[in-house]
Length: 197
Image 1: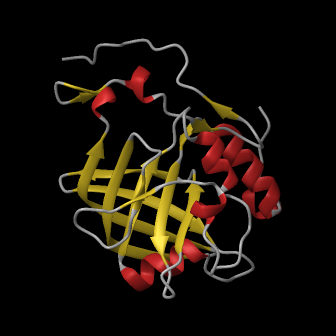
Image 2: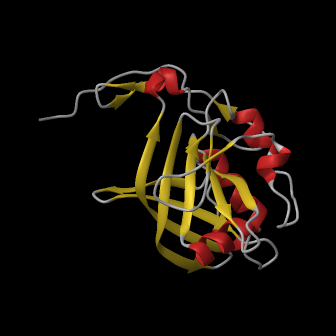
Image 3: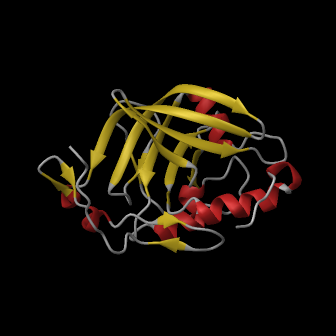
């Protein structure tokens, strides 16, 4: 087995080892609003559940050349954001939003997405998603080169086509995950294992 000391690796080398091994990673498409009311949209694959009681999620957002990205700055300023699950139907549009734009230009407009009003927060979501979570900022942790954002979900929006008796039909959702480089993955084969009692 090969062994690597992260301190002897470049940032890019560490990035490649992490993104190539910690797979598949769910993708959060996040909308936020800037001080000039520009709606920002960006995808993040350093994303997961923190807890279910209360329902909280985490997103790690890297800094660009030591400066906060629009999403981090907007969330820290407004304390609100919307997280959408990326799926087979919206992944192409979400990919367009990863283009580098000035903070006063909206990636939502670039990708020709449709804004929808949120119920409990001022930040809008996008119509082209089967799942969206309205979130308020629970905590932000400043890390070297990153902002770890912990959001509390204050409203769920779930498309009727994927909701069955309180559960989500993963086939109907068609969530897409991030691998390394330009690679993505669909759910693929599913198997079950009973937990020991």
